[in-house]
Structures are given as structure tokens and as C-alpha cells.
Image (cartoon, rainbow, N blue to C red; front, top):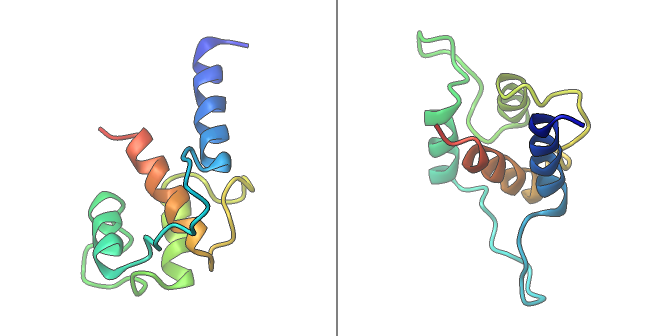
Length: 97
């Protein structure tokens, strides 16, 4: 396995595993309006003319997956779950420019 594939595999594994530990308490949801704004600033989902899906909607989440080239890879939790937001957040932080 080439090193860059190894790094990609580790990143994906990290997404699936959650890359964090917690003390048995359910973590607070990241799926908030301010988080949606952060993601939108990193991954614009509109057409540049003010048209696009409502941030946080399932359509918006699908577009985010598409723009990050994650759609149809079956790597993310269900779009309707809070875990989806956490996985996208970790992906963005791992690929910070």
C-alpha cells in the first residue's frame, strides 16, 4: 500500500470510528445554525446567485457530501443523524487548507 493511500485510509477510518473518546455521555450535537454557516463557508452549496438548499436540510447535506466527493462511498453515518455532522466536521478539520 502506498503511503498516501495509507493516510487516506487512516482518515476514513478516523471518520468511521469517530476519532474521539467520551466519558459515556452523548456528545452535544454539532448540527446547529452556526455550524451550518461554518460548513457553508468551507463548502458553498449555492449557485453563486443566492440559490441553493436550506442549510441543514437533507438536500443541503447531500450537496455537501457531493462537493466533498464523499457521496456514494458509504463512509458517512446517515444524513439525518447528528453523527453525520460530527463526521463532516472531522473531515473538514482533517483536510484544513
